[in-house]
Length: 294
Ligand code: MG
Image (cartoon, rainbow, N blue to C red; front, side):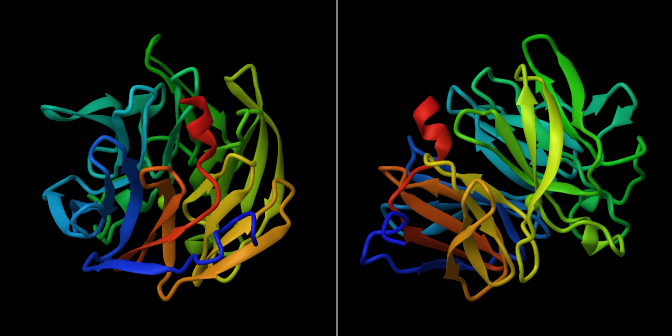
């Protein structure tokens, strides 16, 4: 544990008041943690200096996962617009919302590779008939894929098509492996509930998909990979840390169901955790793998 956390690390509770928090991203310039309250249809921000949380936007079209692109701009998933969008001074701008076979289901989580391509998962949670996390709608293609969008060329291609409901995703530090969580079991009896690993070929294709680990209780929703290649996964009762081969190294108990997490803070070593209604954080001894590439 000593290489994962400083000796005095404790879980801090920062905020309660979301309906279901998701999509955390650290904004270095503002020193704020931005995240989604999906059923609340709003975006929240925690300010590190003041310790206060404010509502950044309401009627936000049910945002979910987000990340920073290589220029530090926020890229986020929109259930409501069934799109990947990027924040700008004029508000969110849709980057892509469809591919050859139709509109996306409801993009859930997103990462940006070093070559600036945008990789995202597309399960159906945001078009469910309940309308809890988006607008009820119908899928326009058969399946739930992981896509790669190349903004420079405008091309969008499926890179993983053999998962049920792909959810959180993260690259290994050298981007040779893509980890993707499947939460299919939530709606499809007998479907997978674990993290799969895929080899990334030529920065554009995924091959050799294999089951890496099933995280219990619950399952992996969001996850991140640290600079040493370890996987930091959400679960129903904790954040759990795994080696790149799936060996469990540590667990941080969290009082609420964990949805997602990200590294942040001034030195990038604070782990922010969205968990049901609340936001937590804990100091660690590492950073996000992508810090090295920025
Ligand atoms: Mg998710």
